Image (cartoon, rainbow, N blue to C red):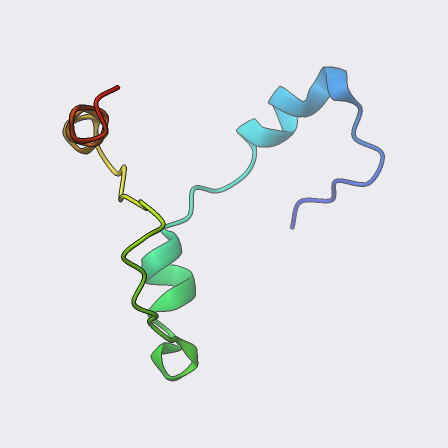
Length: 64
């Protein structure tokens, strides 16, 4: 387990280098689907920016 108390700004890179990668959907959301809720939201403009193509598509769609 990673203990972060007392981590100074100068050694954050070393700390982050020791953090295990995590698949949020698979490891956090999927194990407890009964605790999840979906809400229809057509006005927020939220977009899944999971890869470069989606980022570009979102920028083009919003004329940026």
